[in-house]
Image 1 (cartoon, rainbow, N blue to C red):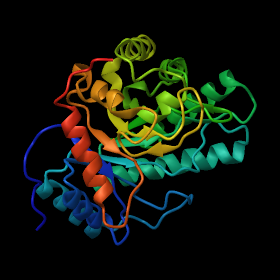
Image 2: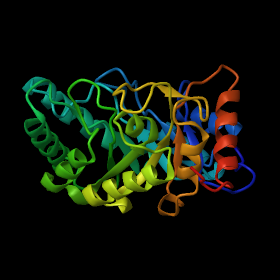
Image 3: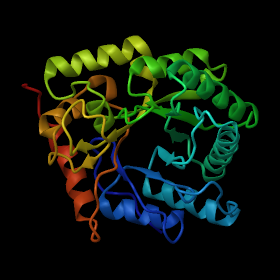
Amino acid sequence: MTKRPTGAGPLVGAHMSAAGGLSRAVERAVAAGCRTLQVFTKNSNQWAGKPVDPVEAAVFRDAAAQAGLAPLVSHSAYLINLASPDPVVRARSAEALVDEIERCDANGIPFLVLHPGSHGGDGEEAGLDRIARGLDEAAAKTPSSKATVLLETAAGQGACLGHDFAHLGAILTRADSRRRLALCFDTCHVHAAGYDVVSRTGWRATLDALDAACGLGLVKVIHANDSKKERGCRVDRHERIGHGQIGEQGFVNLMTEPAFADVPKILETPKDEEGRWDREGLAALRKLARRKGTA
C-alpha cells in the first residue's frame, strides 16, 4: 500500500498523469512528495471518456486516502466551452460538464477546475450569461453531487473570459447554482492577464481586487505556475517555479499569504521524464514559504 508522504509543511502538490489508471497518479504524487493532487479523470482533449469502473475508483480513493493526499482536484476537459456562440457546442459542453461532475463524485474528488470559456466574438455579456446558464444546467442534472466547480482565472487569450476578476464575479452573481461554485487562482494566468503578483504592493492590490469582485474565501485551489512571458502578455505559457517572469518573489507572496495558508497549491509546470522538476518545484515552494516578502 502506498504510504503517506513524510513531513507536513505547506499544502503543496502537482497535477499528475493518470496514465495506467488514477491510482498510478497517486504513486507519482507520492514519489514527488505531494500532499495534494490534481488529475484528469478522462482524456483532456476528448468529449467522452470510458465509464468509471467502480472497482478502479475504489482503488484510487483508498490509495489517495492511505497516501494522505487531500484535497483531490480534477481538471475538466479543454473542449468544454459554456460561452460558445454555437448552440451545439454549448449543449455538448454542458453534457460534458455533467459527466465531469459525476466522475468527481465516483472518484471521491471534491473539486473540479473549469475554464470559464470563450464568447467567440459575441461579446463579454453574452458569454458571461451563457456560462452562468450552462453551470445551472449542469447543476440541475447533478442535484446530489458533492463536487464544487471551480472557475479558473484566465490569461486573456482571444475571446476567453475570466482574465478580469469582474468576469468571475458576474458569473457567480448570475448563476442560480452559486452555492456549488468557487474559484481556482492560477498565478501564471493572473500575471498574464496584467495583475501584479510580484511586488508586495501589487500583490495586495491584486488580492484586494479579487476580494472586491468575488471574495477571497472562494479561492479553494491555487495553480502555482511561473510564466514564460511578461505581465500583461495575455499568453498562457507556464514555467517552472522561479525560472520565469514571476520569479521567486511572486511565490514568496503566495506562500506567505495568510488568506491562502490552507488553500492547496498545485504545480502545473513543465515536467521531465524522471519527475525531478516536480520535486524541485515543490521544494522551492516549501523553501519560499519560510521567507518574508521584501519587494
